[in-house]
Length: 411
Image 1: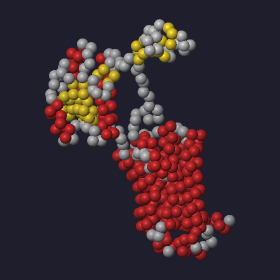
Image 2: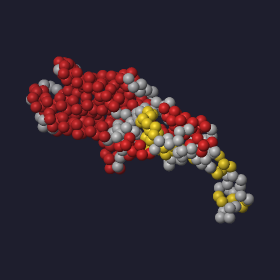
Image 3: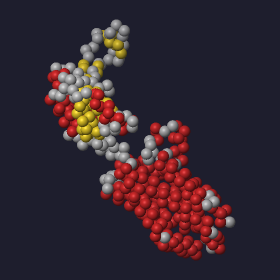
Image 4: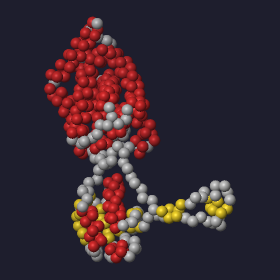
């Protein structure tokens, strides 16, 4: 009972110490909020306001209707309509145009006569990802225009407007060299009559139907916020105490090493919970990021990840000799991996195999899967038990290492 009272008093003392430091408290509470807002608005891969120019040497009602179709969307902004390709190159070089659409003379006549109307798409591909998305948007508008004219069509890479592919459908499994068709039983029969059909695929996006990149990044930002508050600030705080020699005072107290660590990190766990709640409120109020799963499970998983980050911060503070070294170590060991190797910005599947192996020891990698699963997919414990189990295992290992590294420091 005495030990619990001493631990409780130590935690209250640490909490009062943080509350007295108004500057640090403001940073701990406001900086995560600023991070979520700034990154939520700035860290986006959506392609908007595409600047397009048209090369229309012989305008007719079809080319004008197609240009108007682009102007009616909210993604395209018409910069210029010029009669020749020579006027396009300066626009690309000066960065005034992202996409150019070249329309052949006699465009309407070709469509009315049933011929292939040629349309060439030229894209500024200095940013390959954005360039491919812009090309897809242009192709989608052209395809929508053609479907309005009547009949399914396909916009092929290359630029020509082509009829749909023909699919041969037969009730047989193989064909012999002389053209005879063999049935499943193996007997030769007369060549079968084939049926030509048009395949019109329908695309449906699950969990993020509007393809808003903010729905991808904001759940991952919670991991970045918790890493900063828990790992970085804990490492800095404990290393500062070591430099000042105040940890030596604790040697005369009856507190054990694990109680000292608990008392030091407990206030940051409370701040982490406050930051998670704030981030969730901002995600819903400003960005309309959905929360389809259990908020209780999300908060519990966030506290588990916060404790993992706290254990990393304690371990870094125990093995570094100064506050500056602890800050640098925390940045290298937590912030950089949490940003680059967690899947927050770059897909893990696109990384080299060696880096994919390294990502398994990055706690943020597992936590981001949890946050995105709960918020976007409505996943529960049955789907996320593996990720939560890995985080719990990391917590046990890191706490054991932190206690062993911290105990000699106090001794």
